[in-house]
Image (cartoon, rainbow, N blue to C red):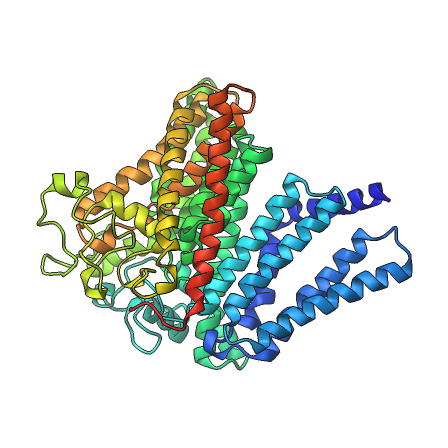
Length: 576
């Protein structure tokens, strides 16, 4: 009987490993009808719908795990499980705060599932990762439910006016693929390449054509950034496996991706940052695959990911230096027969360059807009910090910057305007910034746990940063020298670009993790490799290092889930 269960479990987990992207798309499709309205308008019928779908899936899984039992036992198990799920979702339907109820039920469901698997000796590392990913999707979905259109958004504008990301989406909704015949600098955010906004507008048009009320359809399209965030978890998992992480180090590394607040926040944002992160992570993955197997079948996906990333947001170029490095390494290794690789590089350029630059080149030709155009808010902006000495902006940690752990801007009640890009990086990674900031002034229920999350995250990611640096310097069996340079270039390009951007545009809103999100999986990878390498050592320092990192990671993930559940416990929204 045990062998039947083990084969069933292994078959289920193999299915998830073979088709994770498809399953994530399917999950978001199932959740889409539930997200038609904001948290104030979620109906009981939608909760019942949400209960029926996972109920059917649960019944199928329970049946699969109990193939060896007789019909009566299977019927009882199936009935009890379906009754429990239906009761849970009916509860969601009748409680006032449905988003928080979903978060709680998700934790209970995953806990019961984990106990069930453990009781049947099936709780493997693969199962734990799968459960974490489902819980990661749950907290992203919960955040989407209590985050309405225009709430805690970056440069949102509105769907009923022509400005901001919402106005840009509305433009494509109204005009199809008709390119603007005007200078895009006149309309805020129209200077961005259009891929993300095309996709959002396409889903908006589909839902509207099917009879969905426009305002509800605008709420529902948040499912796309949530999908991008979910797919990013899978891509990062693939990268971690490629660098030979396994066991507890792999679980710890992927846990940071599943529960990191940045990916929760931007999984519910209407701007293009989450799609850019997905393409950049995919570019890293395909770049490593191509280096290990430099064939046309690997360079074409790499070219598509880099090109489409730049077609989402021009900063997708930041993966290019690392890709160029591995191109050069392979060319030098095969200098006596270079033609094969020169052809591949040509194919890469033919695909990547037009995809990545056509929008900027068009605007340059038609409207003389510089290729790297970014709006400048000017020195009169209330967020301008360029009047402070550079040394103060870089090295000052006083003035109460660390006593207020949330993104700081005076206009929304914070004690000062953020001016240190390093501190801004850590704060916005947990709570976002400025108008969009999650803070105890808007959400007093996180007054105690918000600072705890911040300081745990600071300790954890400083440790991860040290791990990354050491692992990129130290020789090991996990990465070759060229691969260590590859990841170092990715990290360095992101970080240097972030600081240069903060110097060129010294505003409080500039000091945001969204301009270098790739640092998060790279630091998680560095921690994972350090943990994996230390497993062979039983020295007290190595043992305490492992215990400390696992404990920090576990507490960080729990606190993140708790904070972003508690934020949904009030109808009060952050100021926009």
